[in-house]
Image (cartoon, rainbow, N blue to C red; front, side):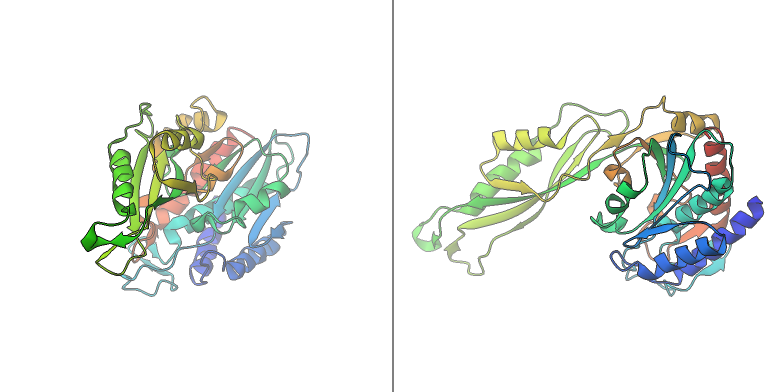
Length: 353
């Protein structure tokens, strides 16, 4: 049975690789996933470009575990030497855009869902969701489909982690800042230089240190990544200066605490673009983590964000593949990683359901 699951998963992944599925343009891969479910006589539903399904004997009185990964991809890296949409097997690897991030996880979780789909005597429901727009944290991705999944108690988010357990994840907030001054002629020392005001704030940001350091994620950080004025003339003192702060927080800080610190210290106006991508952590005593530990899996804090940040229940980020390969040219996943991913997911879920 598991051999069939593996072969089906690889065949499905090759179809997905061969089909462009950039964020917000996932219709065709959504069709491939629904066709796969139809082939296996699985009832499914679609919301936008998100596909979800529940086990055959779903019971609202039982707790539910969610298996989730995404089927959108980034644009292909300009350094590709191979066709990103041609799946190629070579030296035990499967090459192609989205193979590692997160196609290998997605098809491994689909195989795991198939394994449990027909089981009648289980303590938990098993729910599956293939989400869209993960790469851009879009509002028509996992957030759109969550209300249709019923009550979810906890979940596994499939991302390439070398099958180690990412039990915590940094939060991401982007803040747009505006320093106001007054225009004037540089030669006559007129005006009020908004750029200098911005630099004062940027220096404070550069030197600010958060007190609470996480054992999993380290310290929280503020980084200024963009600065600009509207000036195109060398002799005009700028009346406005815009800059952007990239905020990465550990699980010990809320975004409100970060914003309070900025309010108390910055002269510039500022506004967060979004506060949706919060830091998350799952307890080391959680049944999911214990299931992984029983299989000899290690755990760590992940510096990257995922759909895990948008789920209002405990989740474990884990999957075949390596995050270091994500978004790189000639992306690939080892076929053995997919095989191990299916086996690991099944063994973990078996301990729970």
